[in-house]
Every structure is written in structure tokens, then in C-alpha cells.
Length: 356
Image 1 (cartoon, rainbow, N blue to C red):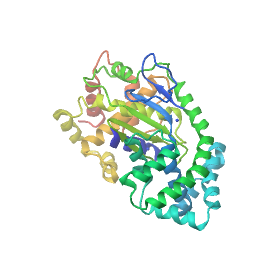
Image 2: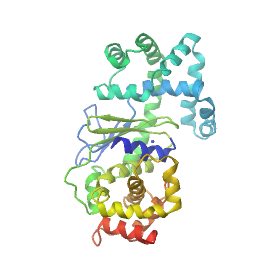
Image 3: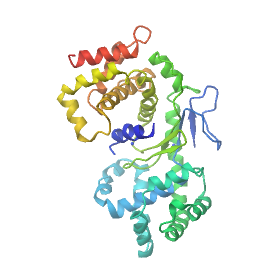
Image 4: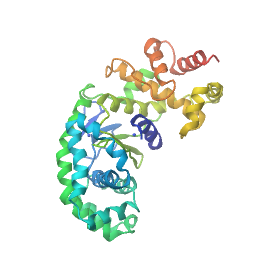
């Protein structure tokens, strides 16, 4: 699921939370410190272990590597007081550092990226680790052997003096966003059962788990894997309805793949190559096969449709691909899984829309 999450969220976000858990009937909306493994969907605040690396990289990008890009976010900060505090922190923090600390930051991000550093922690059971445990892991793990002394010195200092105090300030803001998302569905909402009902399809194998991590960033997206689970960060400017749309998108994929992998569907998808707009977008920079590109439009459209069906949004909103919005509107207008299968509806839609 992870590679597709990056595409689904990344394109939505133009690149793709304490802790609330939905989806297991009868379980509390609030997750404690227990392992969330086995739950279909977790929406939570970004863990400190991930924030430690991601925030330092964002400081580096804002002040050193991508100054123009981050300067362009000032207008958004002016319209959002809560984001403005984080935005100012990126600059105020760097402004307080001496040349030695600035040189360390540059040295680290000349060698590393935050995503693989964070994923190393996640995959080794350190996602919920505190600063001391993280530093101990950096000291011992072979992944961090390059510039190890610099990493230990910098993150011990940065973590205690800057990252942790700021994380404690932003965590309540992220908590509130999770609560808003939680309020949009019933307690005990089971996303897999909901999809089985809405698609009319019952999967032999349940989908792998998905964990969405809300953070304060406006630019940048990270995806991780933890055994069979997929994790993805969600930017501050993504509203609660988009959080659900992203969730529906990912969980819809295995339902669509009960028929999009068939020879007959691939043959039909091939017929769509005659459409200039669809082909032009495909040639831009789409990391899919042609059949995967067609499927992505369908899945995104279906996610928008589910947002309407669940009462999260009143309409399907704007499209991000080529025919995702039109497909969503068609579903809202006339799809009934009690009368026709999702495959039949989809095939008929494509044939009618593209005159096949």
C-alpha cells in the first residue's frame, strides 16, 4: 500500500494527529499507548521520533536549501495564526544558532534525509521512543554510522532545547484536528465493513493497516512501512474531510483490484489511450502503468463519492486527476450496489464517457 499512498496523498497535497483510533467496532475512540497493530486505520499526531528528524530538515530547507519555496508560505502563515507560530519557529530557531550548529545541520542533511532516518526508527520499534532512547539507537544502529558523532551531538542538543519544547506546544493543535475528524463518523466506525457494503464486494483477505500521522508542515510528505502496515504524514493544511478522503482512497484499492487486474479491464483501459487529456497527464510524471493510471482516477473518484455517502462532505469537490470528479458525480447520481456491481457500473461509465 505504501507506494500508492505517496502518490495518492502526494498529488492531493502537491508534493502526500493523542491519538484517535477508528474502525474497530466497540473500541474506544481514544488510543492509549498500546500498540495499534491490527487496527485497520489509525489517525494520530505525528510521533516525536518522526518530528525530531522532520522538523530539523524543515528548518534546513526553510533557511538553507529551499529558502524561496518556504518564503512563499508566508502568506498562508499570515492567514493562519496557529500555523504562523510554527512557521516563525522555523526561522527563529535557526536564527539563534551559532555557526557550529548551523554547520552541523548542513553536514547532516548533505548525507541524510529525514524520511529514511524516521523509517529506521519506525521499523525497529522506536516510533514511540523518547529522546534518550532515540539517541541511544543512533549511537548503536549501523544505519547512522556516517557522521555518527555529529548526529549524536546535534540531536541531543536540538532535541532537548528546541524539538521537544515545540512538539509539546503543537501537539494539542494536532489533537484537536484528530478530534474533528473523529466527530465526522460514528464511534466504532468500521471502514472495511463500510466499504464492503458500499461496493457490494467482500474481500477474502482484509486490507493491511494504515496509519495517518498529522503534522504542522505545509510542504513535504513522508511515507513509511512497518511490517505490513503503511504510515503516511498528513500536512497541516489538509482538512478533516481530506483526511477521510485519503483514508477511503487507500482502503478502496483492494476492492477495485478485484476487477482492474483482469484481462478484460486492461483491454478496456487500453482503449482510453485515445483520449489526449488522459494521455497528456500520464506523460507528465505519473509513476504508474497505464492501467494503474486509469485505476488511480477511479479510486480517487470513488473516495470522493464515499465522502458524500458518509455525509462528510455535501458534494464531491474538485478533481485532482482527469476524470476522478466526473466519475464521483456519476456514482453519486446513479450507483446502487444492490442493483449493479461496481465493476459493471465502472465499465459502463468508461465506455459511455469515452465512446468505446
